[in-house]
Amino acid sequence: QSVLTQPPSVSAAPGQKVTISCSGSSSNIETNYVSWYQQLPGTAPKLLIYDNNKRPSGIPDRFSGSKSGTSATLGITGLQTGDEADYYCGTWDNSLRAAVFGGGTKLTVL
Amino acid sequence: QITLKESGPTLVKPTQTLTLTCTFSGFSLTTTGVGVGWIRQPPGKALEWLALIYWDDDKRYSPSLKSRLTITRDTSKNQVVLTMTNMDPVDTATYYCAHSRTRYSDYVYYYSGMHVWGQGTTVTVSS
Image 1 (cartoon, each protein chain N blue to C red):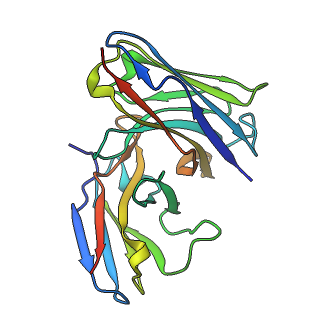
Image 2 (image 1 turned 120 degrees about the vertical axis):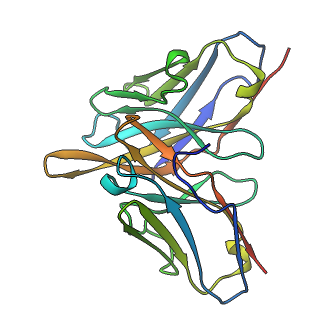
Image 3 (image 1 turned 30 degrees about the horizontal axis):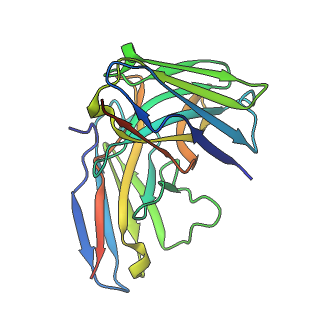
């Protein structure tokens, strides 16, 4: 059971927009920065979003992040088949004094 | 350019101790705000954060595994070592190391995520 809760799966058609939610608590998301990771099949995770809404160099602006209270959201616009992957949210938990990840969300581009 | 690479045994027996080494380049683990962490992923399952060591040698561990984990660094070799004792088949996973950053705000360093990941190394626990 992950500290952060994500939907197991989401799907949308090419070109459409999708959002992935990440729900936490006052000891993690509400008081810390959230990051998002993309894991393509058979590869290592890659940072997509950090500090709630910042994109590392090279990440297209189709990917966006936001946070409100104890929840965070990853948005992906202009979906491509190459976006099919598992997506994870992560943050720090003050009570655990440790980093935590969500359970992951599998994105299917129909 | 920041790169990290994990190395270690691919097969360990139950009860043995696992030692993994992360060799990195492109940054210094003595630079303020920098850290190196370990994350694992059992086959078909989610990511699990394990441990993190910071520029000032501060260390953090997953509460559920803290008694079995030790993270150390060798700044002269640009290496971080993770040891996990009493290995069990449920510890079979791909183990990743990653470059971590912090964000300084209001006199506090906040965890900013795992910014660059290694390729991972697969460890199987079996007799």
